[in-house]
Image 1: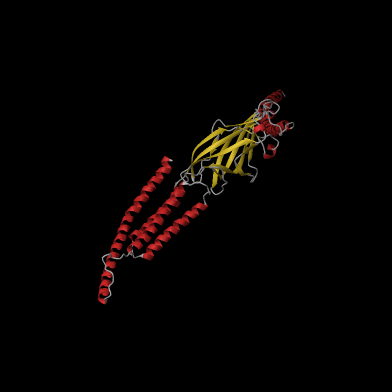
Image 2: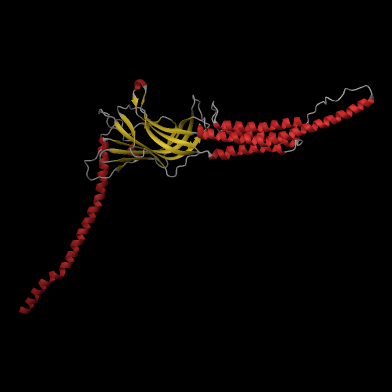
Length: 428
């Protein structure tokens, strides 16, 4: 009995030793399950907190009132414009003014605005630290500046597949708002040097209903105008961009905030060199071929002269259809008139040469007719010889004029060509 009692006491002390690892394993498992449950419960609570914050902020919020309407300070709105693409320049859409002509161009931009609205600050909620990203349906419940573009002719919001708008709300009440627009803007241009001109086209934004007492626009401190890396402007090269303040006064209505971005554009001349200057120069050179043809090749020289005149006239007419009907002379008008003048002069030169080669004069040494038949025959023979010699002299003069024209026309055209390019590209 003593032995059995001893064994029972030993077993009773060993059993807890064997069950200890199992109990530890169960304890660890329960702790891990409790952590998972707490994690799964945190995200709904966090989402619920975000919704609660928005509901608390917007429950008494009035989007019809500006942030500092009841205070004696204006709301400062910083603006940035990101130019995504410049699509077209319409040169035929013109409305006459004094010396400049409004020309329209289309572009796609992102208008980014940033302002502070203390009513939407959620600093009292320490759980949320990152910005709140608002849906487009919630954006309608938030006040936004009444920015509009004064030189806009047509504009449209992008709504495919949803309205292209973005709004971020920060803890301190700062709001970042971005919207995508496609617009057609007018640009006042002076075309005296066209196509060697450099134009300044602007994007002007103002507040429509708030004076400077309640709303002030200003540009971003860093890069107020941004361009897409893949931006290509048709027929132009972008030179410089300036961001200016253009606050305006409208009489008794008051002062209205205004900002303007001026884009300096230099026209790319190579399109016109290929499409206008080289073809017209070749037509002028083609008209000089008639100087190398025989004086008696009347059909060939007439055909060549008339053909070159008609070709240059057609080219000038088609070019004018794509240009504004301005009341002053453009550089390209001077060039086309110069080429047409040389082609027409070559045709006139042939007419003069043709008349000169067939010119006949009476010989002053020929005596008057007598009554005898012998004297009449003698006089006729002498007159024919005199007319033949005079015809040869006229032909020589015509050939000499052709030889002079072969040198004179290219020399004068080259001189005027050099003067033309220097005048419009360097001096003017």
